Length: 220
Image (cartoon, rainbow, N blue to C red):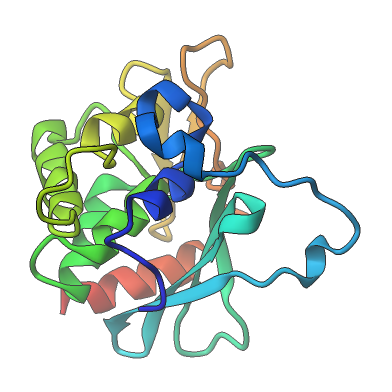
């Protein structure tokens, strides 16, 4: 995996924690601010990380630290090109692509123990009223801890930080399903403490069938 997963600077940038200098402490002096974007941005390529779920199904994470932009796609048999699940950036983010139970299933298929997959992908999963949030937080903390350099006492990501953005309990988000096994959610109103930012808000646009194929592969 071509990412510096044991480097605090990487995580401060990847999680956008660098925007809060008090949070990252001494690392603030080592991180440049948000990049000045121009017409050459399209030439900047991210680092692509592939997670093999099995059965020809894969998640593809594109990490572009220079752009503060990260996207998640999937590929399953029959697709000619990857389908987008969501993206996270500092402008028009739509990271809420997966439910916690789905991410947990996928990551266990990639690696039975919490590790890099969960640490990198948890930003694309939210928790809701029917989730065991304590268990989810423990797994995310274990994933981050598995990568933390021995003896490092400075900034390091945590489940508490993840939940600040992705705990959508009590935010008027309701899940729906149809007779074809597609699951999506809608927020009843936008006057909530946290917004549900997702392309998974109806039976169209989101790759429901492809995600179901990937989840079935993860269960095998």
